[in-house]
Length: 557
RNA sequence: CUGCCCGUAGCUCAACUGGAUAGAGCACCAGCCUUCUAAGCUGGGGGUUACAGGUUCGAUUCCUGUCGGGCAGGCCA
Image (cartoon, rainbow, N blue to C red):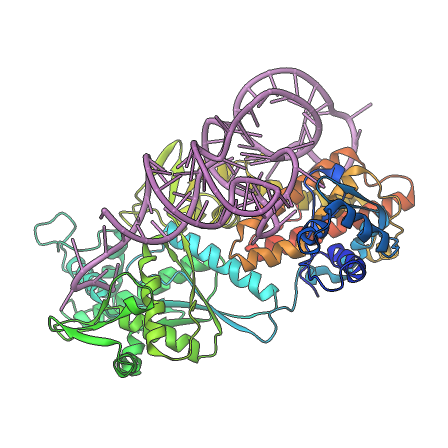
């Protein structure tokens, strides 16, 4: 399978043949564009303009020579020269017709490629500490991370989904203290309530279950409460297990799964933190100052040196972070992608510098980061900032319950990660074309309805003659379908699922326009079968595309 | 103050990584259901791509500066 444009490839071969004759020595990077203006044909090549300078020739004259040497092909209806030296190709309808059986034969494989076969990637996302329910920002990460994993898997990569968290630090101590206070009957606002405590209602729930000696099981741990309010260790372990379980439920509601939960504490117990520190010291990149141990990260592009070991002998979080990424590399992941909020951007230079200083043979750009901006939530024309359950923020679960998993996924993926997003709850609930997720799903449901009405077996369309597909809407739709594989590949390459979201909206638009212009279930069998075959190919692209985004494709709406 | 990211129609966003006349949706205006789902479609007005330079055949895209917005910067997680 390929992740390029099927017709571009064939055209590239033809042009390449001509270029070998016209310009055997001057190499040219063969780029084939799809012109925005339909009058400029289906494809255009700027090869003549690129060659003009090295060959010291007029580009239009070169274009003419390329055309003269172009092998004859049934794909090309017409090729002409325009503008400064563009060569425009107009393809025959038959060239486009060839795509429909290709798509239908590929089925679920349409848009999948094996470019990444044999390569391993680790995607780290969400990575929330177990101190509360997941918030909408985690939702954006979950949607992005899951989509990116799907996109890379579709390119043949072996993808591993990892969730990294700390179950031992200062925040966890605060969590335990909050639960303990609640268990002792102290409430937020009381004089005895700790200053830095968590105030959400869920703290009271944890305290109640702790006192009732409940057992709790999450995807990566299990614990039974002692019920003793003075047993802070039991409180801590119970609270962590409880909140991990809550997060599991949040993720399940969002249909996101992980292959592994990685504990920061394990980096200490396994000796990796210590070993990393040794590596950095041995590399001669550290120095003592003011009683602390520093790493010369400025040697690797960071804007200031960083403390690794504080004057009190404890580590900053920076050392385990480096240790963790060395571990990722040593576990065989040649590529690592971290999905985090933009507030973490300061760590990028630091971690990469630490990895370079460790001299473990890790490439300079390792790991990759995808940073996303904040999500704000609007409902009834007002910004929603708090929820009862979590206290100071809106949770992912709130959003899913108010709307739907599909809407939250689609919306959170619809914008570039680095643009701020305002989630409009009322829009996500709208059942009209203001709401883009319905627009795409509706196209799919309409196709399904047509097939239901038709009642035939789709196999009978396999040898359909597609010659009747000549209407402008039909050509436009086939041209759009041809772009699907490269759209998926581009979305993966750029870590940009929004490109696929955008594509699906445009594809659905092409379909709806066609649906309104032509009836499918017409008397003429040849026309009917040809149109049904194209509708079937469209259905395949919508289903495959939505699946990569984690959005369902209902057959009825 | 310093670093990173972002500035495209009234609003939310695209633009195939440097291509030709910068495109969609919303909103506004005017139309289309006895026919496979009107959760849909068709047409219309809307732009100095924040601003000023530079690179070249050609710039929304690359470089420099200015302005505006976001995020970060401490022996902090």
